[in-house]
Length: 375
Ligand code: NAD
Image 1 (spheres, rainbow, N blue to C red):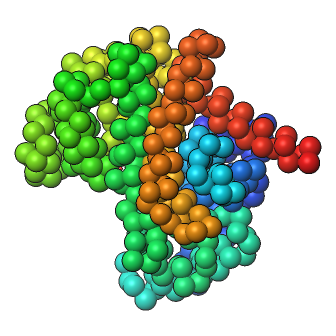
Image 2: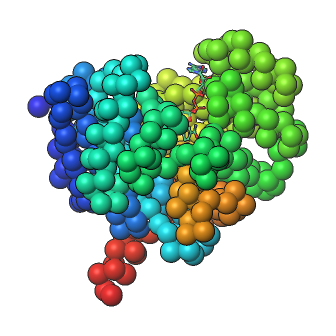
């Protein structure tokens, strides 16, 4: 058995049992789909649809299961009991779908495929709500909305929450404030130096604008040089080569590009007190590298906590009174409160923030599950 196969078995046999796994093949439409509803204790499993090729079916499933479990933890952290959405009786668990293969470019065929996929989602009776991820677009969600109501991430003109990236960036800013307070005793960005990896990206550029307006000194990098120069000019950031951004002397290193950026090679090179950014799966090996950062005295903000702003915004489409930016943003601000709680747990239990966040998320799911069992 290879490592990928072992990971799948680990997920299937894990103590925290998944709710539902759907594997669907349609040879005529050329579709190979998996939907994993990881946990519905707090509500329907929500998570985007990833459409990209995978070398094997097992690899697609391993990615799907990891992403679905991450969503369970993310939603448990993002929509705590104190949020406007939870108070309105709406909660979400984790889910994720994978369409394995090259995304179809032909619009007619794509519509036929997405219609069939939306019908598959309907067959789950509301247990899974989908949205955008790598390989899927707002246009896809609009198309699917004609067939299923279990779709989120729609444009404002359709009563939706619009592009999630500024909401994600706003959540990162609130998360950074909790980290700054823990490390420097003040949440002020004034004269703090922040190195943004992926400054030309959707989240990175929004974040740069927000931090510049709060008085931060910005460094940035992006492989999209023209885009980076444009953002840098706008916000007054100094650009550095992409392979050097993580070892700049700074207060916060903010990864907003790709996963696996914190590993055996990069962690010893960091010259910052805090690592806080939106990129998913920043830790190459989560437990090991979270501990390495903790041992170096660097506060690492777990991404499933700090990048929850986008999913909070999207989830508000299901508020009983419809989407309201004011309500959604009030909940995004609560990322700060959750951070304070997590930092306290980490200090009290002498564990990394990653382990503290996992503990809080798992405890919240367990509390809700026990409550349901008792009633
Ligand atoms: P994006 O594609 O718009 O931005 C990524 C940026 O990173 C691009 O500008 C790209 O050129 C740059 N980049 C790629 N490789 C790089 C490298 N080696 N060095 C420097 N820059 C590099 O994506 P995004 O939507 O802004 O998302 C950024 C990250 O945040 C991703 O990991 C994503 O999964 C995560 N995330 C995004 C959201 C959201 O709302 N968009 C929500 C949660 C998590």
